[in-house]
Image 1: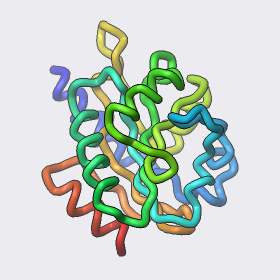
Image 2: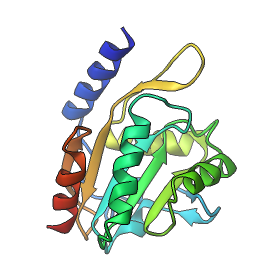
Image 3: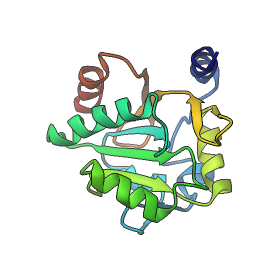
Amino acid sequence: MRRFAALALAALGLFLPPLALVAGNAAVGDIPLVDQRGAAFHLRDVVGSPTAITFVATRCQDTCPIVNAVFARLARAGLHARLVTVSLDPAYDTPIVVANYARQLSAFAPAWSFVTGRPADVAHVLAAFGVAVEKGADGIPDAHSDLIYVLDRRGRLKSTLPLSTHSFADLRSALAG
């Protein structure tokens, strides 16, 4: 049943209007977040580089480790692109938790930013990207959309890619082109 819920949420994300422009969308680009170094982070900070954005929870054991592996491989590939991972669980994923998690994955800012923030601020970012989340009985967001958003250098949405066995190649191509 959980798998069905996750698929339904992912499908819903395909039909919701995604963020059209980070650079020009002050409502989203200016939301205060915090990266794994404890530094202030805003989505407008990615303007100037092609960027892949995804959403994970540090306690998720379903698709989040897969997308983290894809992003880790991209980080090692030497692309001139930014990677941004936004927490789905900001109440648990405090800046310290995110810092420890990023360290385990060798995610080094600014190339790969793990960000979190106040739950209300993160909720606004999730809504802007059409990310749907369902928490399990244990409070862990274990059913959520698993899309990866690719922004061009101007901060405009270039493509939305589902997490799949082709994610690395698809993302590498989308970020390079």
